[in-house]
Image (tube, rainbow, N blue to C red; front, side):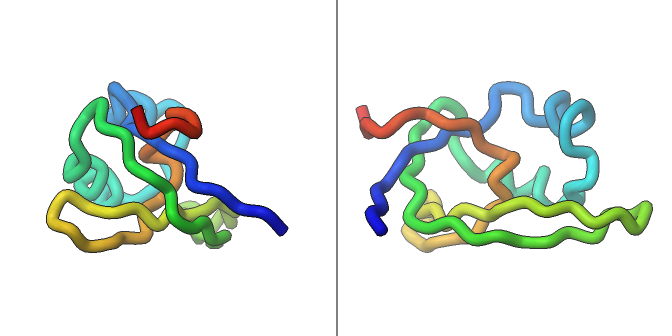
Length: 90
């Protein structure tokens, strides 16, 4: 198996995208999304599958990304708060 780092950026209008496309994500993830700088590329260092039980008891299969944070830590973050930004850090 071969793996490589890819880059993601915050969605431009996370609140609208959240309401339209993935309302099952808790408000805590909305707060987390605001901790990443708009337009800045973040490397995804690992991906893991997760299962979410929504408020309506529906089961959602999704993923989380391991990304570096602005305070030099690492955080598993719901993949939906980001969009793909390519393979090049520039």
